[in-house]
Image 1: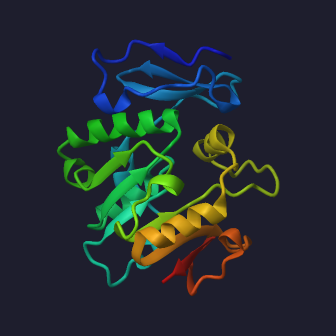
Image 2 (image 1 turned 180 degrees about the horizontal axis):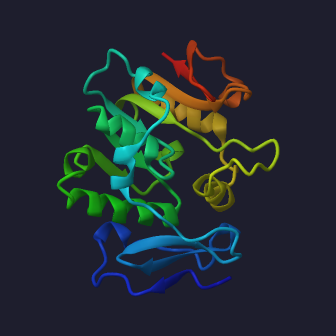
Length: 229
């Protein structure tokens, strides 16, 4: 699969979306503009096209453990160094935090940029979207020293086995990005950038990121948040 962009996107497209695309995305993925929105399509047809609409997150249900990791830090400036689909950043922004999202993958960055532009134009989501800033960069290299009150990390973790319970968006993330980063470098950079704490999201069974023991952790139903002060 060498076709990486199909459809007829806006002319001109949002400035944030004018970035370089590799001729072939990992896992055979490509972008398709359809029904007024970018979709991430799987050239190998493992799942249907995936779009990103932040208004769907308004109905988010489930664990509210993540905001507890920032207790006592009302209005904090937070870097989400592994933005992915933006779901956790949106949750934190909906709780009043200001987020800078770092995403180095050009396909995910384009989906996020277009979804944020759409959210800023929607009266129901504009206030939350205004607290989100997107950066197309590798956080492990570009996070500024002491630039944020807190840094949030949700690095990819290899699945022990394939499971039907893994959602399509997570499957796509695993196939598109994989796990080829330097966890130790990412954590070290995050600790330099955060003036108060670093939060690392981990599966309950997983060891600490890069083997670095946290100061404490907060448990969710299926997830552990390791905190570095």
